[in-house]
Length: 486
Image (tube, rainbow, N blue to C red):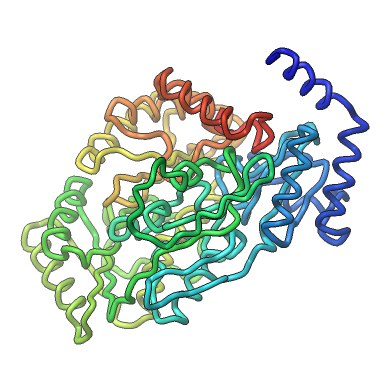
């Protein structure tokens, strides 16, 4: 019987008449204004930011409600049409890009942009998948609360995509990643059913945690249409500093000291190499290094306090003074105004953008145990040099949670295409170092298309088999984001 069903599914999938009728029905669900068939009008949905991945689509659909998403998936599942969910199109591993054959439908969640509820007293809010991260932060701010997730792309990335990739950002050290900030979800399954899991409970041990299945699944198990998120009290004050350090071991020492002196008030600890900041000040207008002399490494620290009165700044001053006495910090500046704090943060948040004018960059989003970051950087540097002598690592990231953005820039004067042709051996070399240190090849960007083969190299056969079983159980016809993860 199972063989008969499989043969029937293949017949349906191969029936062009059924497919065309299904596409017409799907367009009718969202209306002509939100069903985009023209290739030129589709273009913003078909290419990712860096141009590494580009595809074609039979349609781009922009549903305006969870009900419409459910109707679309029911039709697609029946006709075996691949659906590629897309948020703000800010992903960096091709997870939001359709295939090149034009057979798939891109499902943009941008119109699901309502903030459904904010409960300041309960510390929760419910937002739809198309709400940008910046708008979610603003909704919390209006209620005098804090939604602490913060990314460089927060003006354009959307909550659905943030949760589908389990994004991290600069505040993970204090508040956790997207998964830790989510209480419940609303999800449309592959066959068009709607799971209402928008609970705002902090404790709920009633069987399998379906929420955690969908978070980080990159749209391969279901489409997130709304989320219940945690809110926090806003800090009464924050203090931000940029410190210069003589070597990576000093960065490790400063982190230990910051943990000991800052305790729960340590809300960010970002590290950057000298070359990273040189690229920023070279290519990003209006940026400058506010320190006396360049240094091999820099750390951006942020301390927060629930009490006003300068406690955060006083703690930061004592911390940096102690670090200077120990020879850990060679120079530092504390922001005296909000504008100065924003200028310091801009140095860190421009690190990705600053690489583009410099040439080809092979990017790695990895994590290793925090104590092994210096060991990773030393070993990775040697591995990179073996693959491409003269290549220039651009190193920055979230030191406190072990997430290193280890990007490798082409040697000066090398042809960009020739350098980017080394992407696979370069990534293999870096990821081998990561694996030797019990790390992860994807800390916060996901797997998408870029790391499918690498996933097979580093996950055990049992892990891959279990993941495939989950996929088969929740997406029997394989319509959800085909070609991603697996």
